[in-house]
Image 1 (cartoon, one colour):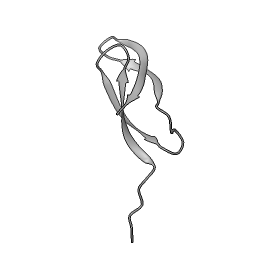
Image 2: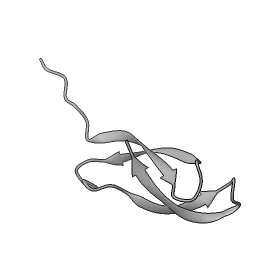
Image 3: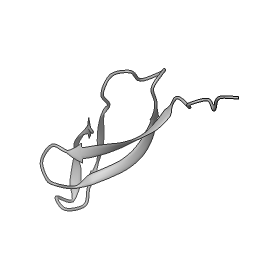
Image 4: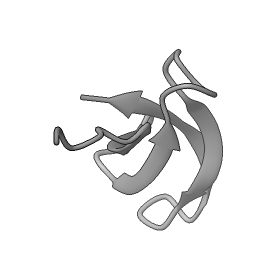
Amino acid sequence: MASKKGNRIIIKLRSTESAHTYTTTKNRKNDPNRLELRRYDPTLRRHVIYRETK
């Protein structure tokens, strides 16, 4: 029997203003496009936009 590949994948979120990254998971079926979230950047000590990278 073939194993089922899940919809959840691990992605990296990279800051638009520094080199800081977060890793998280996303559901391919619910979010087919690239994510863009506003998260805290500890190097800049403020909230900035993080974009999904490969």
